[in-house]
Image (tube, rainbow, N blue to C red):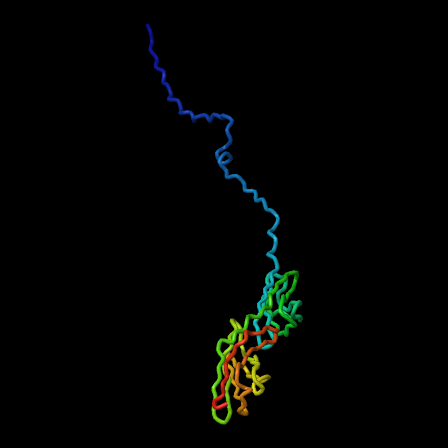
Length: 222
């Protein structure tokens, strides 16, 4: 007689998947940002020290020099040495600006120096032109000579016009005004020797001589 038996099979538990190492670095390592290395060179050189100078002309040989000192270690209270056709020492203010009034000895170059920087200007004198000259005869032998002087870019005040001609006009002078005009009234004795050409010219403090203007004088009744 055969007997029968039964066998119960328990279901197997699912196994966790096995990790397989292929020799790769972890993602955190493989994709980490690269470190930055900063390479620095020598610092740039400081800007050079600079000095400027300009000139403003006054009367006669008087002038004013002014300018600016920049990029010096200290721009305040710095000496600016002036040499050449004008000499002196200026001192900068808190902003590096300076100004000094001087009297020049002649036309030509004027130099400035401070903190190793230099600047220069050239003193020049523009030409003088007497662009008009005439006379007016009044009563009693009074004759007025008048005219006008021009000088490009420069004033005319302080100039004197010299007159030449007959005895009554030679070595007579007329003061030039700020607008360039001049006038002088002279007494004539009524002599014919004073008739003829009268010349006018001027020379400034620098020695520049103007052109020579002329007028022809014929006294009434002489």
